[in-house]
Image 1 (cartoon, rainbow, N blue to C red):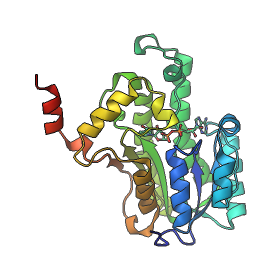
Image 2: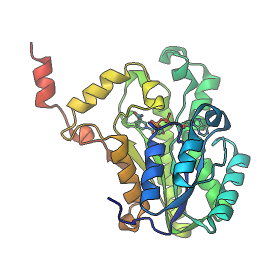
Image 3: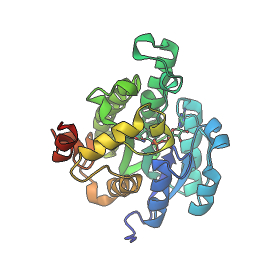
Image 4: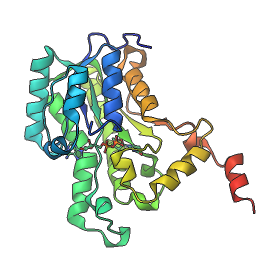
Length: 270
Ligand SMILES: NC(=O)c1ccc[n+]([C@@H]2O[C@H](COP(=O)([O-])OP(=O)(O)OC[C@H]3O[C@@H](n4cnc5c(N)ncnc54)[C@H](O)[C@@H]3O)[C@@H](O)[C@H]2O)c1
């Protein structure tokens, strides 16, 4: 059911790798709601993924950019404004990667070069996106910039490893830059803390299926799906949420406020 919530709005969507990606579902929903956008991903992901399929379905251009490269981001933002015919109203940062997680390094035996890479790709890149948007004056007033995060920034999940630190950095950047961009341009900056979701990045965390089931049991509404997340993102890009900024928004079916559930008690009762 489309309501034209994003009619006339322009933006950039990072991170659509395949049809399971949260960014993929978001692109389809933003299109359905009347928004236009460019799609971007790291050049290497572009070769592995299927972004061109999505681009065709959304009538969107694809501009490769490594989100850690200021040069790539400058090219991305300036080309997007040119192609879309005006300044931007929304940006989705849907990016996460940890070489330590990917290569199974235990938390007590971190490779620090990789650790810094995790922080750069999954955390600092959000600052680079925001700084590029500011320097190029690419955002319209009341624009909305979002990044996706996970509750491991606040609570420990052993297998989430150095991604927990990256998400803490990401959420902190949303507060600091949200203040700056709000004052400068009335642009809002938030993070959405999403339930465990079956995607390439999600499945990369070992034990994922167990904590997916655990979160399902611990959430009165159940886990939020990637489609639900896409709808929430649309609402955050729309004019109905103009005064929301500098927040870490829980999109988790109630998980973060739940102590224990009957389901779990039953499961643990001997
Ligand atoms: N899947 C989950 O359980 C879950 C839960 C909460 C939050 N998130 C977050 O949602 C976001 C999207 O992840 P997803 O679950 O859709 O998985 P995904 O694997 O589909 O998306 C991750 C994306 O990051 C991109 N990326 C990696 N390195 C990059 C770089 N250097 N430059 C640009 N892009 C790069 C990948 O190519 C990929 O498209 C991530 O921030 C993730 O941490 C996921």
